[in-house]
Image (cartoon, rainbow, N blue to C red; front, side):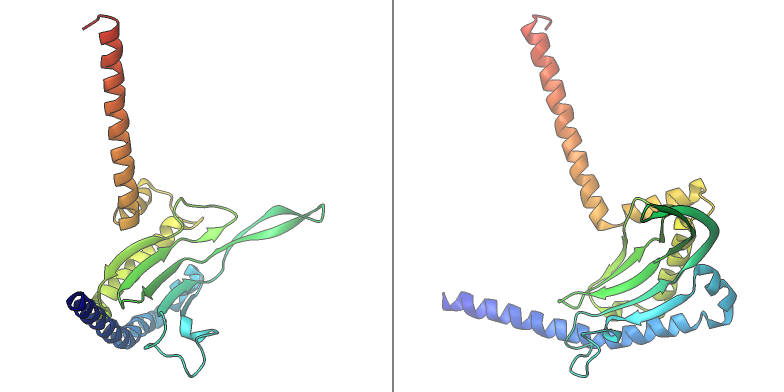
Length: 226
């Protein structure tokens, strides 16, 4: 019994120390993300077309914007989010029984890095949201890393490049080409949550198929057909 307690305590201690090291490493990841974000300043016209881009951390807002919080003792997140994109057309909305004209817009396309309690980092994508168009996915897991130190500036640039293409694929002003559709499917298939869902559906369908075969065989047997 005591031996098991000692082993468990040692395992948890190693996990605690590993998580602490990863939270310290988050500080460097934030610097890299901000550095790559700043590389976009010379192409401000294109950034404006996206809807402007805003880089924020969860430590910019309450309750984590207080001096007693730092990257060492919070669940960290840093994100790049697109602001409002006007779609330049109006639609009708009914307010208090009266029809009014409302300018359509889209917003919310986001690339974000989120660190869990173990210190691992998950990279997410979220599509534009508007009253004009919706897509199937609420967000997509782009990548997972066991430690922030695994994420280089080159990888962050790749994440940004994927994000910008995803913006074009989920905007009401996107091309809606078959290539964009398959690109979104490709990203979803690489999301481990989607893979698990597909795997579950696959086994369910296989079970249903074998049940159907058994039912057919039983029916044929009962009718003296075999």
